[in-house]
Length: 97
Image 1: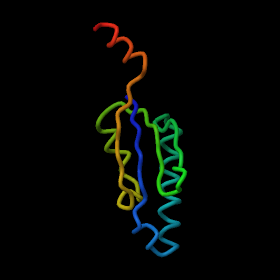
Image 2: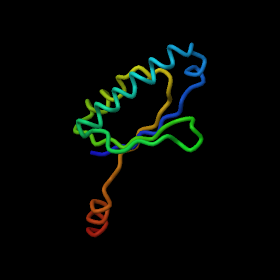
Image 3: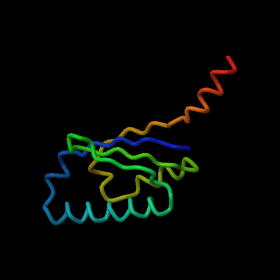
């Protein structure tokens, strides 16, 4: 199932020393590269205001959803997870009404 995650960076991230910020960004980039290679991370964008990011993930289970929060930047973001429904599924369900 696909999910959209929209995250906003907390001010506490910018308050960290530059070397700690770099560590978090580097570790996060490696984590997202891994998710991309395994086919879990489908798309990712920074928000236009540069205060957050949006990602589309294709997950197999609730455990996968929990697993994606296991990266170094998690304490420095707030996020919202929204399940996505394929349009064909919606049309099929609506057609049964």
